[in-house]
Length: 375
Image 1 (cartoon, rainbow, N blue to C red):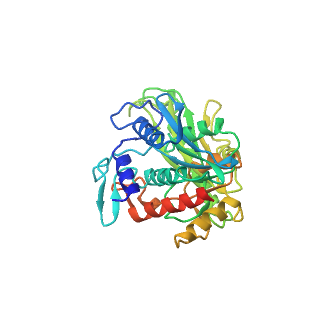
Image 2 (image 1 turned 90 degrees about the vertical axis):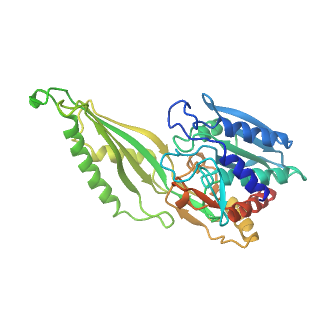
Image 3 (image 1 turned 120 degrees about the horizontal axis):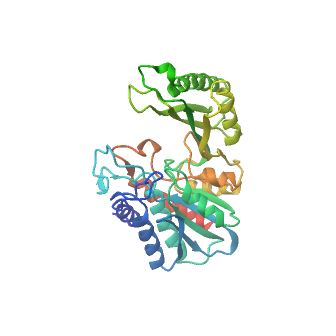
């Protein structure tokens, strides 16, 4: 195997499942194993490297190679993965077959991180690069982006960023944002033999869901963005009630609203509140749980041209594109940092029961990242 394939296999063997809002407790949960591995490997190769506490027991890794100019160009990718529930392969035993490596995180996004690490190690062995490079391996991308948020709190100025995600080595300059919102309706519990003695929270929520369905349909009539399409809304979960013979006093839903460039999370939230006006009561609640801005970097931005040039160097397709999903790039975009999302793998393989990545793409990504770093 190539050096980067060996490194990726070692990383897949390290469970780093995001605990999704809880403290890491299960045998596969938390990024500590990955944090220690990434930190120790880069430090062992003479690269300035530190750990940064993002949440209790969960730390980012920040590596730095000093260049001739500041502020730095940031290469960012995440260490956490989604759950392994329902996987049809052994999640932490990387297997290579037909030029593919399988295992949880092989595509999303340990392949990007491994390629960035090898590229940084190569650059660190030579003359100083044109611009200082920071490689940032973050926690908690798969839940609330807590890792990148913590990094950006202390980062200082950033020239531009390259976000490692599976793009099939395409140059992604735009993607959707996400607003996730919890709606709670409250009622009064009573015995179901006398339901008029209570107030049914589920009935009110049913009316709210119907209103949201109508609002979601109206979004289909909006002008699509040229690269990412139309905004969307979906009610993803619903829960309520404690027993069939009890009038429910509480019901909750979770809404996923995808934003296109030009929309803001607060503006999208206001539209949800307007759609529910006249349905919710004074004790009901609409509470955002995640606000991720949409990304759009100008085609002529320096970072776009830099990535395009590197992609041409491997004979790749350098035409800028957009994607419908969102990434940690949302947090950079909110701070007006120009960025490109770029990495090996196909998003269709992310989070799947048999997750895999084409090894040739990972190897090619090393060359692209290195060329970008060398400017």
